[in-house]
Length: 212
Image 1 (cartoon, rainbow, N blue to C red):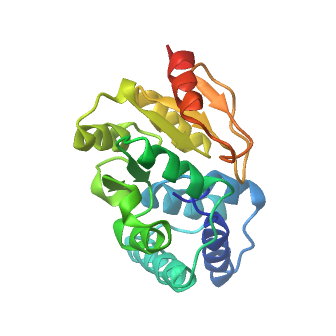
Image 2 (image 1 turned 60 degrees about the vertical axis):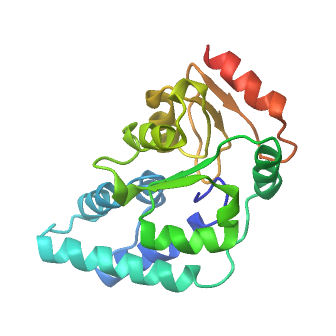
Image 3 (image 1 turned 180 degrees about the horizontal axis):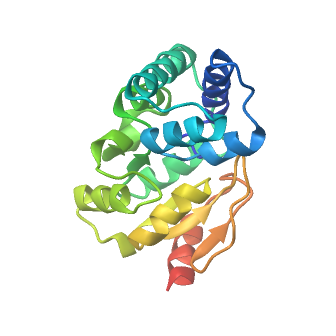
């Protein structure tokens, strides 16, 4: 969702940088980039380690509440789409393909994203707080495939981050990578695009063939 379909990583950027300043630090770009695509617990661990803040249970809980509250405020209005994303969703729905939204974002915040995206584009959605281990572990993609009633190897995942691409690949999905905020390394089975503009069904079939 964030960075692939919606240009919402910029909203997360505001929240995590404000959190750092609240603790008397400026977040480096290196640390910020490490957070992209991370699950909530992993992101908080990275923030505390990266800023050198003692990760007491109370501090971690307060930080999580701060980020959720701030992102909720920022997501309350319309969220910009990523280029070509809406047309890509329309393409697969018109073709009758089963579609899942798979995101490390927790359910309460994902609902704001779905307000912009439109729930009719998706048969199911799976969020980071609905699995034991979010991306880069494969569980979230395996769960989505299970809910769709398909095998992961028959799925094509669209991802923008190293974390997401790793999760989808580990689950057995073909992966089309559309980098957003940070580069994603080449790896076997990954196909790269500059954007979702002009995506075709043939592109999805080609991704499955490249994955093998």
